[in-house]
Image (cartoon, rainbow, N blue to C red; front, side):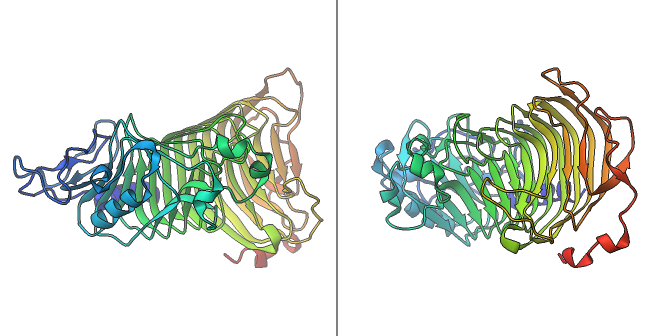
Length: 456
């Protein structure tokens, strides 16, 4: 499929022709510290190299870097107390100018950095290697009056590999924010890592922990691979999205664990996203994998070509969910949820076109249209009196829903809990548990389908 070709293309973009006379450092599955590197120079050693770097044995993506810029050599202390922001920016600014370079955050150090933006465009094949620990400030004063929306941002970079190792982590110091009731309720807490306006980006072998809010965000990006990333925060952490995609095309999230997000989604797919693939992933606790909420405040939302497969969702409020606000426009189309295990999930399968985040929401006639959504090979247990919930707009029915090989059993002995459907149309291709007799067969009356909503 197209996304598999994307993965190949992004990796090819990031692979350097290593025919260099100097020794290269392999930027693969997470190597050791770079404190002994010669900044801005190739270190001596054997010449030559393969035409293309092989993939690491753990299945990651990597290449050879011939110019290593260690943040310690730019004045970073790595004691967890001293502000190392300027050293990080200085190392980045130098590496950005040189093709096939690496910013090295060495192991066995803790680096305190204030909010910062790593800006591009840069020369090709840039690596940001996190072998040590990067920690965030615990006070809003560190933002110096600027927006609290992000802590570490990569802006307008193309062909970047951000990767960690068994020793590296990015720590957002979330407890300092969650423990304040005012801060916990604020919609403007910092996102740990944000990519904006970037392309051909790989994030791999990285741990991102305890973000004040969203852990990893891609905004207005194209060509993204997230591979073998662990995201974690305590079960009680509020509003801590794991991975957030917005206005992003051609993105693949694979072989990752999102162990957080008690107040929000493991993966959140927002408007402007298309050609998204999520697979081989562990998710929970939290709110599961969600598309939306879309159409808030009468806005137009467009999401298409999303595939979620070979995923485990556990101990979560939802399994796989599409949620839209009343009053919006646009469409969600061609979405496929296949081969999914749900374990002790409150609501395994959800379409909610009456989404409201707790405040009073008024009924409105318009809505985001939903079409061509399939649920196949979804099995597991649920903990509430809800298993399949298709609550579609009164004025814009859901069409083209496909259900096959679904078996959802109550973990608490609830018997005969029926599926719920409202203004939803589609087909059942095999016996299901529970039975989905409420799904209307075929298509709605022509007058109910309003093509103006599908203007994406």
